[in-house]
Image (cartoon, rainbow, N blue to C red; front, side, top):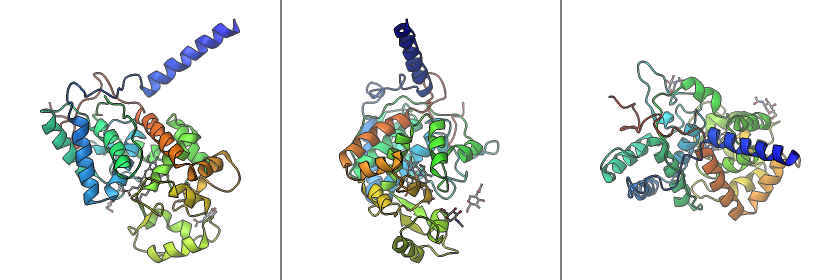
Length: 323
Ligand code: HEM
Ligand SMILES: *[C@@H]1O[C@H](CO)[C@@H](O)[C@H](O)[C@H]1NC(C)=O
Ligand SMILES: *[C@@H]1O[C@H](CO)[C@@H](O)[C@H](O)[C@H]1NC(C)=O
């Protein structure tokens, strides 16, 4: 009897997780028939963009994250504001911060040409471009699941409430990820995306001028030279010491109190917590990091996609189709 109950509970859990994450509806071969050139075209465009500017890889990875965390991976972050809709681009975590929109436009144009029509969604382009960026910068590939469709609306308010903040403590970061169906383990491994890219002075200033903050003093004084106590809000510092290489230096930095953001250092506080152990583990297991990161990116990419006849395939990633 107990076994039967457990069996049905188990089925219910599987069904529930499939219906909320939607992974049953996305497939790696979604474009194989309608546009066999789609993925190769995206990769070519991503590689070219990264050759031109290595940081673009980081920016494309972040775009996919900020898309997925606001009402699912539905391309909503790409919509420009209109007189009747204030979208996500100027929300606090995005304004003057997320970038790569022009590259996404170029990819979309190239894909529409290669596919002889508008068959690849902007949401899928973001997911594939993130993966291709990771690969171009030295990470390990993973199969992106495809078949997402694009939202017809976007919300600044939702972007403000749903994207985690660099000032948050560990419990708030864990709760934020939990609200997206992601575990603390996913938080630690996905934060490893900070192996790439840069942050602006304005988001880490309070940390480097705060004598009580848990930051290596030499690291803090080096950063002060780049990031004055007032002004220069947009001056950039790398999130780890190799911002154009996918490696485990991000985690090694955390072990030495050299996390750039407060939220980064929250993952390792030297108190032997579970997140401490994971940071320690990834710091000296690059192959585990790559494998777990790919799995977590797939999980993040499954957040509430629009599928079937929901949403649309946008012709221009910045605007809802006019028809
Ligand atoms: C855990 C919570 C997270 C917080 C609080 C956070 C916060 C931030 C902040 C404040 C910046 C710098 C923004 C700026 O200077 O304007 C940044 C950059 C970045 N974040 Fe995160 N992030 C988090 C998780 C993630 C995740 C899960 C990913 C991807 C999977 C990611 C990818 C990136 C990348 C690649 C950059 C560099 C972007 C560039 O150079 O253009 N972050 N993040
Ligand atoms: C976004 O940034 C611009 C330029 O700094 C600023 O003028 C604008 O007020 C910001 N928008 C919001 C909604 O904060
Ligand atoms: C300085 O750091 C402490 C400990 O992390 C924190 O409680 C405090 O709010 C910080 N102060 C400022 C001005 O950021």
